[in-house]
Image 1 (tube, rainbow, N blue to C red):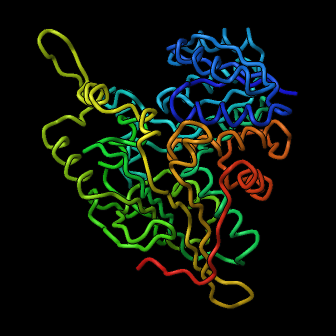
Image 2 (image 1 turned 90 degrees about the vertical axis):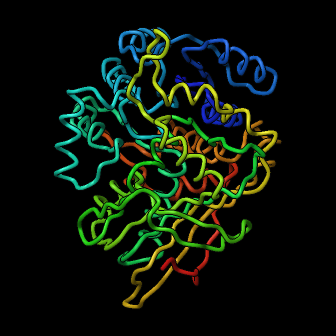
Length: 419
C-alpha cells in the first residue's frame, strides 16, 4: 500500500505511470502533477478502466518550492517521483526535505539559465577543479547528502536507463562477474527511424545541450575533455547492426568513478546518424542551441526554447518509430586472477513499446527503470538514508524487476571490445 506523487507528464512520465499501474498492489494511489494539468487528466482518464490504482491529478509549478510543498502536504505521498525537467531537481528535493518524503529522479540537475552569475561562478570553479565543462553534474545534488541522511530520508538519483540501469549493470558486474574492473564502455544505440528529417527522442533542450557539449571520459584518476563529436567508433550492435557512435560526456561516469574507484577508464558512446549531426551542427552554427535570451521584435526569446517549439514533440514519435535500441556496458577486468571481458545489455523494440504503452523505446527505457526504482524504495529493498546513485544499491532485485516489467538483460562473455 503506497501513495506516490509523480511530478511531470511528458513521454517518460507517461510510461512510468502506465507501468506503475501494472503493479497496483504496490502503487495503490498515484497523483499525477504538472504545470499543464490537462495532460495529467487525459492520461488519468485513459487509465481509469485499466488499473486498480487510484489516480488523481494536480496542477503544480515545479519551479516553485512552496507550491510543491503545498501539494506534498495535501497529498501526503510516501515517495515523490520527479520526472519533470532536470531544472527542477533542487526545488523538488527542497520540498521533499521540508515535508519529510523520499525523493527520486531520472536525470541530474542542470540550470535552465546558464548565464546566471551566481551559478556561473560556481560552475567555472568546478570546471577548473574537476576538469570537465558540461553544464550538468552531480555536485549540486550530492551537496544534499547530509540533509537527507539527517532527515532519515532517501534520495535516489538518475534512475532511468543511462543513467540508471547502466549503473546497475556496473554494480551487477562488480558483484557477480569480476573481482576488479579495469575498463567500462557504456554504449547507447538507438536504431529507430521516425521518418522526420530531424527530431530528438527526448526533451530537445536537454538532448541538444548534452550532445553539443565537449566530450569527456575518465582515465587514470582524472577527466580527459575533447571537442564535441571528435572521437568516433563503429560497432555492430545485436539486433540493430553496424552503427557510428561518438564519445560524449555523461553523468554516470562521474558517480561510477567515485563508487568503483579501481576502474582505470570509463567512456560513454552514443550512436548518431549523419543527418542528425548535420542538422545539429547547422543549428549550433546559427545560434539556435543558445540558452542566452535575445530580443526579437520586442519580445525576449531563448533560441533553444523557440527551437523546441518547432520540433516534433518526442511523445508524438511513438506510432511512427520503427527499429530497436541496444544499450549496455562492456567491461574488462579480472576474475580469480584471470583477464576477463563481459557485456551486459538490453534490446528494446520501438513498435512493441508502442503497442504496450503508446510510447517509443527511448521513453520506455527510461520510464520502466523509474518505476522499478520507485518499487525498490517503496518495498524497502533499497533502504538507506542519504543521497545515492543507483550503483550504491543491490542490483539484483532491480534487475529482476526490469526483467519482469519489460527490460530483460542479455549477456555476452566474449564481446567485441571498443578500441
